[in-house]
Image (cartoon, rainbow, N blue to C red; front, side, top):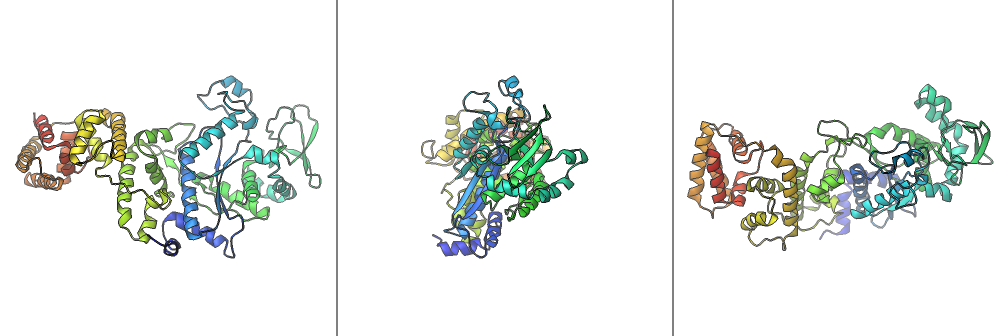
Length: 525
């Protein structure tokens, strides 16, 4: 077991990105940490349901939080999951019930829009509940905060008055970033209509710092209306709102997507105007679809959480989120098998690593320093090929192959393998089998396959995977394949119907010698 001091010393110099991020927080408080500790935040817009990006941001922020706790044991930390549920309801998401009713409430705060599902007090409350259930499902430790509650309860009042007092400086920072039309009507304060509750985007006609009020012309009557900036009577435009929230809640760390770099810069400037220090953080890259285009909720061109979890465990998704957060990555179905196999490879290497290597191992961060001891004796890719060639989605039949390959295993005694079998069945059914195209071998390939069959027969069924692999190599060399990868490509295309495949020796051992020879015979015929 690694003692706390050794672990801390290694963490302070580790090049793993969560530790690099955590060191920003150590440097932030060189003279000591506040009594409240360090506060992390993630934000969520509840106009729609939580999505894979929500998972990524909370998972990555949690990794930084846990890394900081290793460096600074005893310093309290909190993660705030903040819902911008006081935002105006701008458009009706497709596929919701009662669309006409929802359209009638456009412009109102999400927490004043009736719940079209009829289960909660508002549409905002419904989606907040879905967010909390989503975060709870993955075991995240967080404190949920509602924008509506913070505004209405007075939690933001002192900072809102500070924004009012700094109005000219705030406006001077924001206006240069706006176009001429928007600049002419912009106000950082958005009053809530006292009658309809609508979030109004209207220019201010006056403000009174001493009274803590702002005035505007009613859009319908033209009469002057004066409201306090406190108590939930107004909300702020989002870039100023973001800064105000950082100040009011004392946020020390928040990451954001690359598309928000300019917003982070602007909100940081407003934070300084309000007399506070902007939080630490970094900008992560965005996810891309199969064609390399940016994933968009409105286009529905990405992979959902539920889709990923149909084919792989949550830990594999956490691995995907851990790897290269500053690099744009494709988020499509074909990345799942690689993520699954890499996860188990990292898990297998962890016990034998020195502490410095462990801190750079993704499973350390996925499991908060305590990864499970799981032995996975076969790969997801190998299982996918087994499902494909065996031509069955019956887990019991597949377990016949697996238990022969790994004696002493069963669905009851090895639930991790059993789960992987289920994932492989579903993935192969949906993505591998529809695209299979086994081709006939050419003359040289056919001769090499006959030679391979003879070599395998000579080995017998008790040979191990390495012996089978050796004879696969020898058959390719004897047939004059140069480079040898052309031989393996031929095996994959003629025997399996794919352009890529598993380590053939392992596949032969898993599928069985008799079954493999039968497959070769079918291919030759």
